[in-house]
Length: 133
Image (cartoon, rainbow, N blue to C red; front, side):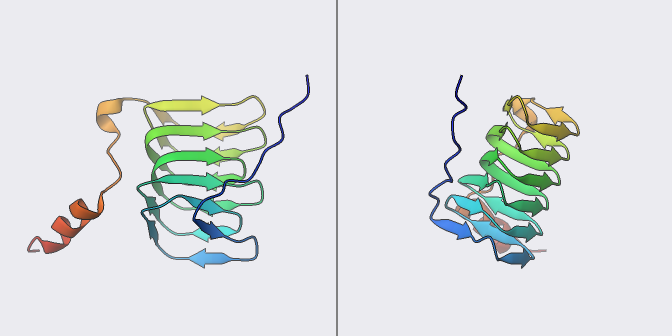
């Protein structure tokens, strides 16, 4: 059987293969990582870690597709998927988990939907900022 060829995601935000980000990344749209991200990543949409992409951080997202490397804990409010050749080291919390043949995973998986929080919405984030500290 012929193996299906991976096509890179067409996300509005692309972190190119020559780009390294050190710090926090927040987005309300899909993000495709082809370079390296070191720091917390948070998106209310989908995250694609492409074959050449590396994420070394805590990730909070709706869906995550891993074709590259993720080192860090992941919280996905909908789906977490490792594709053939993808590698994840860290704990995962998501109601749906897909581990394809040829993908690598080391960590703990929690699929308890009640314990997997939704990624923060912009309004929820604004309310938190408005609260007195």
